[in-house]
Image 1: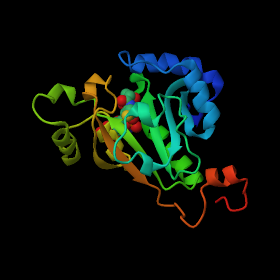
Image 2: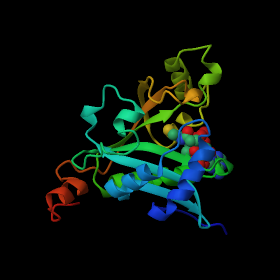
Image 3: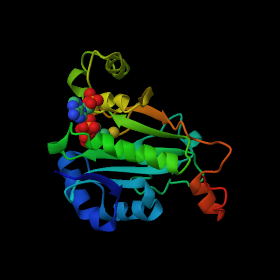
Length: 224
Ligand SMILES: CC(C)(COP(=O)(O)OP(=O)(O)OC[C@H]1O[C@@H](n2cnc3c(N)ncnc32)[C@H](O)[C@@H]1OP(=O)(O)O)[C@@H](O)C(=O)NCCC(=O)NCCS
């Protein structure tokens, strides 16, 4: 039986990750090797890959942010410091999903679900308050001449339209919080826009510091 696992990303995965990313986004500029290495250095727990029988088939990359600094408006490039994750802030309460993708040949087989499970588990382990992300809306360009992006997203929420990313994220328990315009201008399928989505960690304990805050202050006693 095929073995599908989600595990932390290792430096040795970088080449395979870059190859997979080029297949997933043929028209969007891929990450650079040193960006991935830097992400791993800054926040190793936040970088996950999915592996099927030893072959890399997906990834989910995250950083921690102070959400109040970004809540009103941001682009992908701003919040990820152009993919370097230099904006990663261990004092933050929010796990920010910067990227998730799955091998196009393996879509619909729960790889994305497992990666999202991995993120939720990480959020709980670190005692973070929530996961926030801005999701692509790749079904929008095809109907963009018929409706504004806000109506498109609402139709996905109402179940009248299916979007390959937002429908999946809603099914994964995320709440839709509105549109981030011009989030990723190179993403022509989404006409550059994204949906702001949030998942609240039901186990978050506000009376405790997060594990990253404890580690930063050298206090391991109060870590949950
Ligand atoms: C979004 C993405 C990560 C989802 O990954 P995935 O592995 O296909 O996700 P899953 O298999 O867990 O779920 C996909 C769908 O298959 C369905 N599915 C999965 N297994 C199923 C099964 N056994 N029976 C029936 N349906 C099933 C899920 O319910 C889900 O349906 P939905 O979209 O209506 O919710 C993937 O499509 C992708 O890589 N897209 C391109 C990159 C991208 O745009 N990423 C998002 C960046 S914001």
